[in-house]
Picture 1 (cartoon, rainbow, N blue to C red):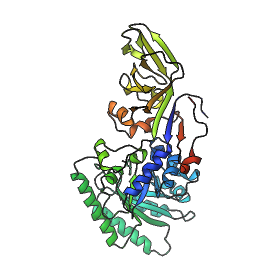
Picture 2 (cartoon, helix red, strand yellow):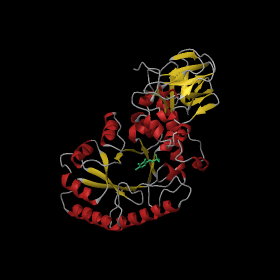
Picture 3 (cartoon, rainbow, N blue to C red):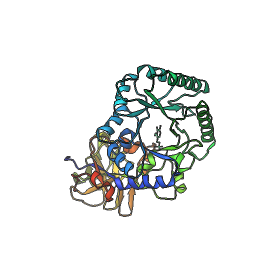
Picture 4 (cartoon, helix red, strand yellow):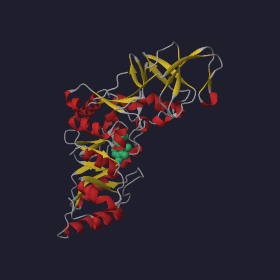
Length: 396
Ligand SMILES: Cc1ncc(COP(=O)(O)O)c(C=O)c1O
């Protein structure tokens, strides 16, 4: 239940279609891991995960142990990989909830081998290789060799089947860039390391490398059998130029709505918002909208962004405040008139990409930033998602 007139609408049909289309685009022998970290990139992890799984996703990825537990508590049974660092003392929780964890280096492996609990189900892990992202993962062949030897020693010790080496992966740093020189280097580095692991006789079940950009440009890696789809599952491109590479259209799943809380005429010279960075140039109609930077509508959008009302674009004037902002109108709209801050109305659109471009960031950040106090309302018309839809849809 919510009382405010500001909400984000998440179109589960779009998530479903994007995943189903990528599943068809993907080679038949490869699995699809749907990345639902950061509360499903701000869309709501549980609903996104459920829609993605129904559309054919095989795995889910989260960043935190908490995020994995949230999926399990919602009754989701699919395999889940925690991509981020998990403190070793919390590994029994990962075991209990059957969450696979990331091993970022040899020392961590040693630590978990010593701590893994025999009172819980076995712990599955995916080894992370740093092939050029410079974030988590083993960068050197020597350390990888050490890790392989340690795992084999452990495996030969008769009573130790508590650790299951389930996967190997790495992350691409430049797959969204047109110049593919660095991408090729990462691919070659990954191949070499995977081959080293295979040669030792260890055959982890899942090998994965590509993110959305890697998948879109069909560079998923020679030995891989899974991809990790993120941003494009939500209908957004990792980079503009990639649009032409896909044989299907992505459908953006995220819209943001509010409603006018006041409409008034102000005299010439009247200041709008803190600092009066905008002053009426004539008698002007000003509309107030109950959304602000505490809702994740960035203050950097002050005097820059536009909203849609009745299919027309109106500029944000003055500074975005914590809970409210103002727009300049060309007519006296009624109070409660619906406003689209992200989304489509008739032939007009304010896209996530447009807002990201205005504040010099990437599209990923925009829905992630929309804060928890903005309710997510789930819509869709497909039979596959009907039971996932919000019951208390807002009626503005
Ligand atoms: C390790 C890892 N894999 C996959 C993804 C998904 O990437 P994208 O959203 O670009 O598809 C991310 C997202 O940042 C990630 O950190």
